[in-house]
Amino acid sequence: MKNFINYQNKFNNSNEYGNFVQNYSNLENYNMNNNVANSNMNMNLQKELYEPYQGFIRGNMFPNLYNQYKITRPYEVEPMNEQAELLTYIDALTFATHDLNLYLDNYPNDQQMIQKFNEYRMQANKAIEQYENAYGPIFVNSNANSVTPWAWDNRPWPWEN
Amino acid sequence: MWKYEKKLQYPVNIQKKNLKMAKYILTQYGGPAGELAAAWQYLDQRYIMPDEKGKALLTDIGTEELAHVEMISAMLYQLMKDATPQELEAAGLGSQYAQFGMDLFPSDSFGNPFSMTYIKVAGDYIADLESDMAAEKRARATYEHLMDLTDDPDILAPLSFLRQREIVHYQRFKELRDYYLEKYKNQKNS
Image (cartoon, rainbow over all chains, first blue to last red; front, top):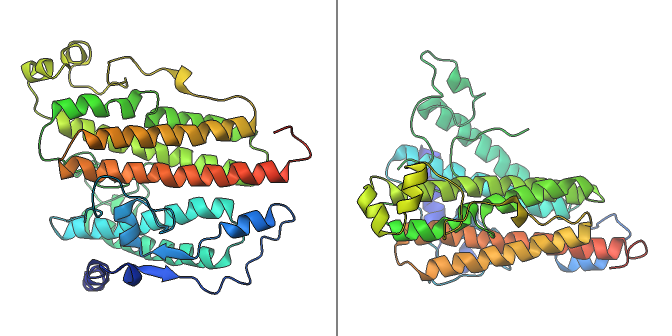
């Protein structure tokens, strides 16, 4: 858990906007490789991302799209134990990959975003493997299902608190 | 095909039973701007998208909406957990209990069963994407109304997350719509 605690310390202590937003300044070489709607799509190109946990608690990885309603700041996710803490770490990384996935569907030539996607994807896969070894399967094809009795039946189920 | 991931997209951990909020939130399960309608609308529209971007985006957002169905279901389950029939009746959920017991059943907040007529498909990718933009706007408005009706942080946190997803989805649909208008401007009267 050590590396995850370090990670969490990093994202939990970053209250300043600037600390959890990553800048992509090197996007001048961006090229759609596409003859149509080129300038239109370039204008929308993302230059900033939240760190995964900060994006996750907002439901949005993109500061320029973020729009808050009613609440003054996003709620922190407060895990009750180590298992929940690791799951939160996984939730944050899988959320980040998913939100980048949607963006990349529209902007398939944004190489830096693809790199970011792969960075988060690999971190998420590693954490999922660690979680499944310790607490049981998230996916049915996990190695964690090679035990007897059958591990898939075990709690927690996602909707139970 | 789809595979199950044994976790929610965002955690739902509601400590306090709240049947009134359950009745209101029910519309985001089986109502006209609900998650079930959104999931099916986008997944049905995949087949006529004119290029790979559209097929990918509708598949991926449609899939995420299925995860939102699960989040809303988890909220309903936790909000109604351990309620007595008398409590359900007092909250206006007596008919729900009579017909379905404690099972979930997709309907709107008035009890009207989910209807596939909520799903807007027109065989025209611009019309379809504009329906999707409107669907995201309507869902966003509904989440704001739901947030207006409670001060419980356990309920507000997932509602706020889901509202924010509508904003991102709207943007992605709009980008794709604008891109298609430009890309196919000589082929379509738009």
